[in-house]
Length: 160
Image (cartoon, rainbow, N blue to C red):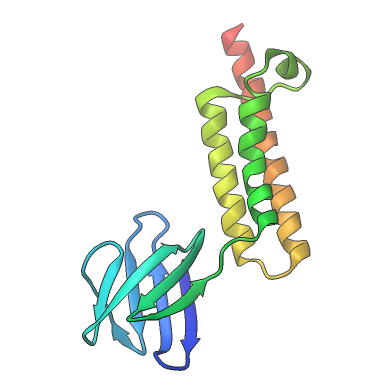
């Protein structure tokens, strides 16, 4: 995820974090920062510390200055993001509820819920309007539950 910030003192700050590998790159005013560790960089003799992550809110500490690069998710984004995970973990592990509406539970349901939750949070973080964020949250919830339902329907004949 690539983030851009225009700062009055440090100029343009470009932070890039790979979703798959977690590799981080940082450019401050056109100068590439040299990594010291996973959370520390140096640029032009200044120490830069990364606080947080691009998914849950990211800040950079340069000397005594704290610069917000990516804001924390709002409470409703977190609620909509965890809904698929909570639903699949609770509903999928109840025999009575699965007899009404079958969904996969256990490790498969948890993994599917985790993927749905992460996808929901990533998509909502990139959306601008509240309505779009709510539609994304509801859409990923429904999509995740439908996938769990289809997987359950495919697995039931194999078990019985």
